[in-house]
Amino acid sequence: MSRLIIAYKASDEYADLKPRTRKDYAYYLNKIEQVFGQNSVRSLSARVIKTYYKRVRRETSITWAYHILSTLRAVLSWAVSEDWIVHNPAHDVTMKSPQKRKVILSPEQSQAYIAYADKLGWYSIVPWPMF
Image (tube, rainbow, N blue to C red; front, side, top):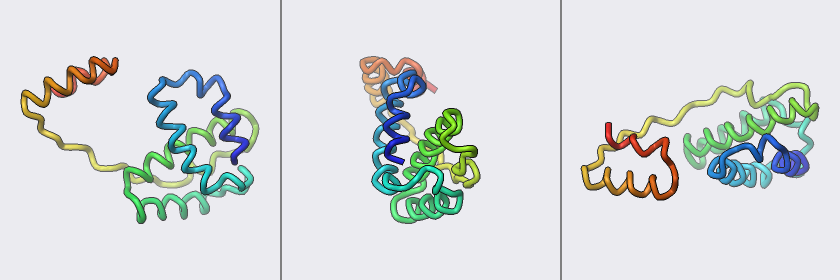
């Protein structure tokens, strides 16, 4: 699995991700590698992944488990496309989505959020606090 993660990070598909997405993927891939790094990619069955997903959900949070499984799905989908494996077993695991955030910002908080998002170049989320 460690070799797969290294190869994925060196791939064009990974390079084409936006910097923030690459940073998030790198973080979660590191967590996945800590658990499965020494395992063969082909040894990861849906049952193994489901057991891991449930453990992460129980020990950490639904949100954390959601991100771990989403990242695992992405890297294993790439593995399928590169003929490392025939089928992505992570797609056979049912994932529970985290609850939507329900935040009500004051006008001052909205302005601060917009200014910070603009500073970071996150233009797609700049209008969000306006609604």
